[in-house]
Each structure stands twice: as C-alpha cells, then as structure tokens.
Length: 154
Image 1 (tube, rainbow, N blue to C red):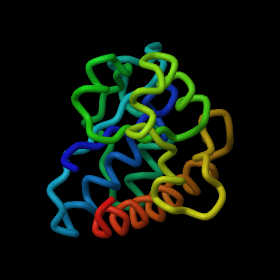
Image 2 (cartoon, helix red, strand yellow; image 1 turned 135 degrees about the vertical axis):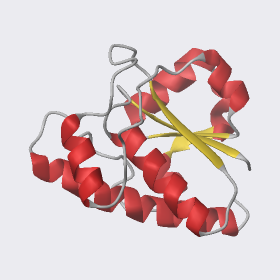
Image 3 (cartoon, one colour; image 1 turned 90 degrees about the horizontal axis):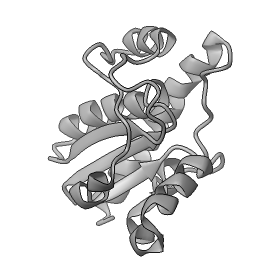
Image 4 (cartoon, rainbow, N blue to C red; image 1 turned 45 degrees about the vertical axis):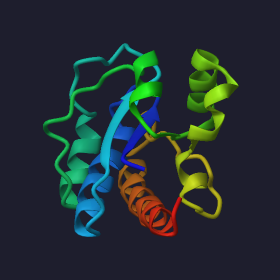
C-alpha cells in the first residue's frame, strides 16, 4: 500500500486532522505512504480547515495551516489504494459514486484501524470546542491502529 485518502463531509475538520496526524506518525514510523484528504461535499472547496480544528490541532502539535479543502472526485478512486471514510454517510456517498466494485478499498477509518467502538468518527463541526479536542485523541488512536494494521500487512 502506497496511498491513503481520508474522506469526511466538508474536508475542514476530521479528514484534514487525520491526514496531518497520519503524515506525522507514518513518517516517525518510517512508513513511506502518501496521505491526503477530501470531502464528499464541495461547499468548502479552497477553504482552510475550520479555525477551531486548526487551534485544537496546533495545541497538539499538528499544523493544519497549509490545508485547503477539496471535493472527492472519481479520479481519487483510481489514484488511492485505500479510501477511509470518517462515517457511514461518507461511505455511502463514496460507494454511490462508483458502486460496489471498489468496496474492498473503501472502509470506515476507525473500523479499518481496528478500533473498538465508535466505528464512526463524530463530526465536531456543530458542537463545542471540546469536540475538536476529543477529535485529536480519536485521530491519534485511529492512526496508531492504522500503523499497526499496515505493519501487519494490511
């Protein structure tokens, strides 16, 4: 496996956070895997990550400043070896776009990372700042599981 795409709804909270955590932790683990993120919706395309997520991430040592949101495209299904959705709504939209033939390469991020429940990564967008801070913890745990699974051969 050489490429992983993390997918959420607007690409301004969860997926850019997980991308940043994964990029940092994969490099530290010596794994040369390209990671990126996008959203199933395009209304935030070109925007930075949510300011609350940028602040929470910075407090944990992750820089989301360079991130710009983009929408999932059909080419992403060819470009990436594994596409990991943050929740089942994102997963349904991904599968609607291309059908079940890519089902083996589209999974829920936390489930693929062998996390105990929750298998869906909660969207902090409409909540309080604490949800963004909790997202950091969940992203770090999920990426640890991801690295473990990658080392086990996927």
